[in-house]
Amino acid sequence: MDDKIQKLKEIIKESNRIVVFTGAGISSESGIPTYRGTNGLWSKYDPNIYANINVFLQDPTYYWHYFKDERYPIIKKAKPNINHYSIVKLEKKGKLNCVITQNIDGLHQMAGSSNVIELHGNTRIITCLKCNKKFSIDEIFPLLQKEIPPYCSCGGQLKTNTVLFGEPLPSKALLEAEKASKNCDLFIVLGSSLVVYPAANLPVIAKNNDSFLVIINFDATPLDEIADLVINDIASNILSKSI
Ligand code: NAD
Image (cartoon, rainbow, N blue to C red; front, top):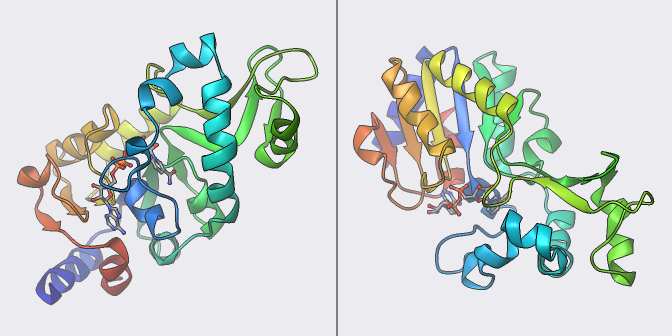
């Protein structure tokens, strides 16, 4: 493992337009469970019911119960961890182009990253689907104690700013992410199973445009075979020691 850390250190030293692509794995060290895997959230909540846009539009009570009982309490107390701060360190060294994240927890921004592309939205922001007014989760949480689903004062349906199954990704974020993936010299995947598309296509775009591809993930991923360096370990054992 020390050899791999040393190798990553050398690659980072030689790179100046780094993209770090993050997934649920890096926030697991902040106490936010991943979706997949033995203790993943989806073993408890069926995503086809609790995180599907068609079900949400027909009956949002499933989603809001899940949000109130499971999501909010965890997100509320989660703090950035050494992985988020290591990425900020890369930015301060002038080496980082941007962070592309599949996470919806807002921890990169909380740690101090300034250029974060959120592919799947942010659960800390809630929007009225009728008048488009935005709320913070702290504003809406008290309403959930009284009524589920919650409504805006205009009578509109409220929804967290996250991409549910069956919804397209925000096009601006996806375009920016594709552009950054084409223009980087090092693309580091950190804590992602790389099975959710189209996000998981970004490492392929980077690799096809001559970037070095590094995958740091606890479990093997379907893209390991095209990567230049694969490190199967917990993220905090690796990135902070490689910068
Ligand atoms: P995923 O749940 O599919 O995979 C997580 C991966 O992280 C697994 O392969 C696992 O081996 C690895 N992992 C777990 N702990 C790790 C650690 N400490 N260090 C390194 N690797 C670790 O997650 P994904 O690939 O991000 O994609 C699924 C979707 O999950 C995304 O759409 C994202 O929006 C959503 N999600 C986000 C959060 C969050 O915002 N924190 C949490 C759960 C799920």
